[in-house]
Length: 337
Length: 265
Image (cartoon, rainbow over the protein chains, first blue to last red):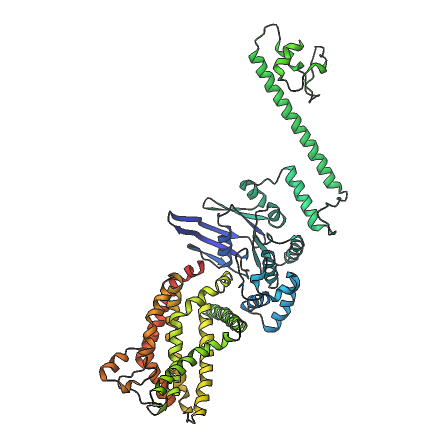
């Protein structure tokens, strides 16, 4: 369990104190995975370091129980002069594992990281993706109650993302994850609750979707949902050619959803068009005070798009072909009379 | 009470894990950075011993206070090296492990402790080897019943060294010029630490000033217990112990308020 008690964090700067958050009391629920959202420089990594116990709050305190990982991410936590194996051995050692256990887990780390001979080469020769593989594999070799992931997957390739996702899913039974990501889909996949950082404030949301909406992420539009569905497919798909999206098996529910969404979309478009029309009508009525033209004549305006709403009553309809394509309707009105 | 004790033991276990891991790692990186890496820790005092002995040999003197010159200097070099190394080399230990402070249980002081213990242990073991080699070579008798006082003297030296290491490591990390400043001013230290002479040969006034140097005191006590050299009249073991305690105190006072600043660099 992690609890913040009247905690504040600020950095002294030339322009006074720069607050990340101020006077926050918050108990992070132990059964939820939590996403941390915020712009660059809002303090996501700082909050991670605070939760991990690497850094300390400027005021108040943070009570942490349970085994919490170090903040995995872009911050270097390996020494470039040592090999991957030596670095991992060091980490296993500081977590108090015995010699035999360390050897066993090193085998597992080599397997997960899957960086071949580079595991026995100095880390300074690694690419950033390989470093993040090593870091992830090392953390997975130790059972934590909380894993803190700070943009972990970012430099990884597709294969690694797949593996890491599978491992994270497997760990979910026993462990919780706290992660930051600039990809809202990562957060939506894993997290239930969220913390939003920004403007020197820390706000907790029970629902990660609310936090993302507040942050201004587009998660509700059809395009976003389609993207998400495609992504889920790519991750779970079995074929190794994810660049070609596999045809989705006919899922009745998804089909129905899609149909419903399409209908809604069409209805919305129709409504918008009708509204536009009404506006134009009003404008026309104001600008042309011709006494002999009665106001109800306006609905007879030719409309190429919406058939149902514009049903003229009483008058004979003029032939449609006479209407030029993009003419404002107010000029057409009198002409057709 | 029981709870606090449990917490304390757990903390101790965590910290010893970290220090051991850092020591293994330091040892490993020393050993892998060329053959000289490990040897250099001993090679440095050996060259000092040879150089100073050579000066005496060239001037025609082979014994000081009835002891072979090389042995006489070799004994003094151990405490001197422990302290002088803490004067300058420790800020590097803190910065070298910067990447590991991302693990919550690793703190700069652990890096410092690990480096200090490793260096000192290698130095003492190496010096023992040299010491016994020499005494065998020059056919000297060693008083084994004095081993306890010898260890105590070495412990006091280590306490003094660690206090200085903590102080200088902290400020050496925070202020860039600090280490250079210290290494410049500690250069004449080797001349005023009674390394290659005995204070008994000096006039009373010089002895008085020399007695203010805790390293000289420790060197003389070590010689007294290891070689049976007569102590000089101003010798007092309480003085270096007091200085060691004060140094430890100052070291922690320097480290504690700056412990987060060291992390942020």
